[in-house]
Image 1 (cartoon, rainbow, N blue to C red):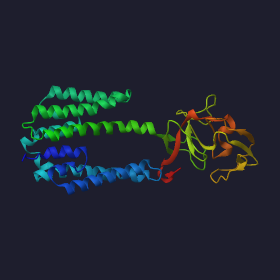
Image 2 (tube, rainbow, N blue to C red):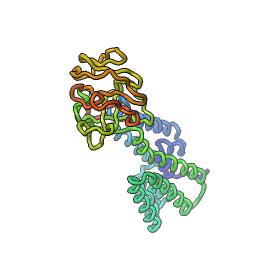
Image 3 (tube, helix red, strand yellow):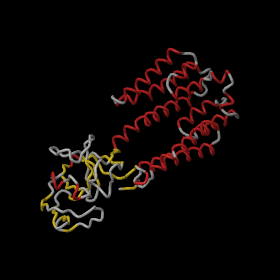
Image 4 (cartoon, helix red, strand yellow):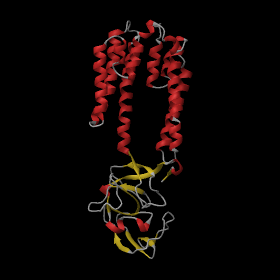
Length: 341
């Protein structure tokens, strides 16, 4: 039976908590670490981005989640060696272990080569990775380069410096999993930006529902079809003045009328198809008259909850569907204002 490598266990656990323990034969411990990590990450993500989650709790749980992950790395090493990583650092052989070099390359491609005295290759890998990270902010396709360089660096270390190839099958699985997971993690911020927007409320037009300074999450959609009562974020309709906009150029209003519905405002009430709306969310009743008019196809009638201090559809007309960014679904900051919308 091939001798199991402590740093290989650590490398496997870098991919996800518990995998190194499974490699070491401690399946129940690995399962416990893996389940704990999944639950912790899931609760953090739900708390921060979920409509009913508490952003403060989610942020506070990031450190415990990292603690589980780091503990998993230390314990995966101990599961094979019987000693801690810190105790092992005094060994010369340990410092030159190829699996340790691969671990360093997971942190930053090229570090492992520098550790094994391959300065030129290490410098190229580190420079390429850092350059790609810098370029990714302007050229999104570069987000793929660091994960690819990480896999290349780990593979090159293995084929060049591993004294034996008994773990070749594990290494193949490791490299494939490393590439897939790193690409997924690297793409996650881009996916989040594409699907979830963050906006700061600039005016009192949505008081009392939204206060000046509230920060909200917005679920972006490519083909928005909001319903009456939804709070939506949209780009200013062409030709509007800047009375209620910010440098980000967006408005936040409530959908009142959908395509084909008749809208009228009279006597301090809003009527949709002749029926008055029961609106418990407004600051005060509107003191103006409007309509009746039919909402055109692919358009919406939107109003601010602060009816008499809102630059909305009663001033500039109907909102084209194409100008809608998405639906506001949560106030995520400040802490005292966190709530679903």
